[in-house]
Image 1 (spheres, rainbow, N blue to C red):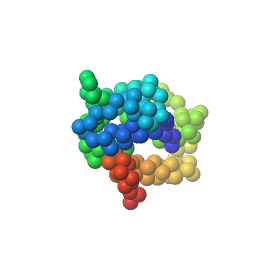
Image 2: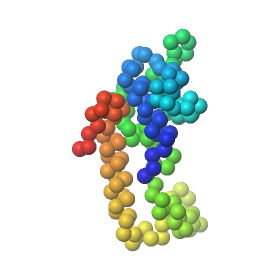
Image 3: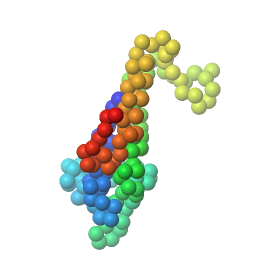
Length: 152
């Protein structure tokens, strides 16, 4: 599993918005300065977050960004899925020489590794993915912003 800078920065910026409240917009430049994030990168991140309806902008004096939904209604898994392009792909599958589309496979079916049926680590990676998804799906942006993440 690889969590990119985009997700790390995105989560930090969203925590700023959650802590600031939905009626008090924050400017991207203010968030960038506070979190030490390059403004151009933050603009790209907020483009994704805006498209996924996590944030909305307010124009004019005192404008900026606010959350589109209550932080208790936004799971960390939802955020990561928007910000990550290949969340939780294992390198062994991505680098496997057998991981190629075969003409015999039905259209739309994702090809797998030729060792998939007898791979000793398949259950390990499946379980780790499930544990991570459950953890991220159970915890919300509100939990992250107030430090109350729960394992169970």
